Image 1 (tube, one colour):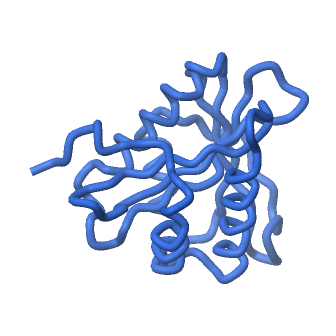
Image 2 (image 1 turned 45 degrees about the vertical axis):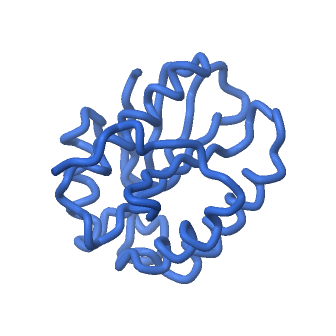
Length: 162
């Protein structure tokens, strides 16, 4: 049975260990990725009302965080947002949790006056499912940069108007 959408909420300071622990269990996340999430998390906790701050949402089920998302306003734009991270517990994938969390992020962005969501990911075969996921959620591939992350590991960019 799918958990209801009301299981999605703003992340709280007490969620740090769960979020970082979940990030550490994602097979495609490297140590540097987890450290980046840690830094964005710290910025989220101290960002106050800064309009360019990062935002974190979590999907909680039975008191356990099963997924999280991080997004933020792209500086110097009037309504473009970067969707930085979406991580779903490997044990709960395939249940629509990522889709529901992505839809909530898009709704939050619209509520903040946003109109455009940008996503960047790797072109490596390890991220093929990630790219398919974005495309199945209406994101359009808008560009690529070869050898962006490392030689042989390029960048793929997506956008969606919300």
